[in-house]
Length: 204
Image (cartoon, rainbow, N blue to C red; front, side, top):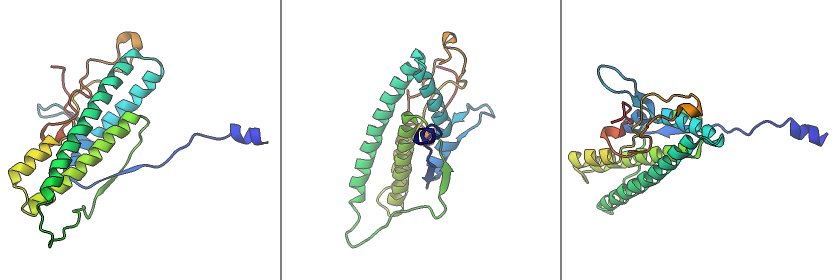
């Protein structure tokens, strides 16, 4: 009887939700469709979906998937270090607040909550970076509001912490022999760009 119960067990599942407080982070998540002569912007949600597909391909011993997963992992780690450096500089700036002034966190009164479906460690690493970016933007806006930072400096830091990924606009799920991992700069630039755009276009 116990063996029968074990055989009938299904896979484990957990509900996950992502809460974002800034428009900057929300735009990175959603992306933008191509139009009006502009390249489309693949949101982080699309990046997560791509990572899920790459993971499944790597599990089938696809060498192209392995190649890109290694490169993306390296870039995710470097992006993590860059965000940590920005956070450290921001921490130092926030220390300029007088001790007599107590300032709480500036949380959005109506944050956006999104369901997330992640099956790849790389997808989680990317989401962690987005959360860190959202936190940095919130604190930069607060620093500007409390006169600790000028608008220009705030915008420069927001752009410097932008999260993005350049990749070819089409991901072709064909056969391994057809090299269905096209030339793609996924992970080539996971930092930078105005507002952290995940720009997609032809390979340059």
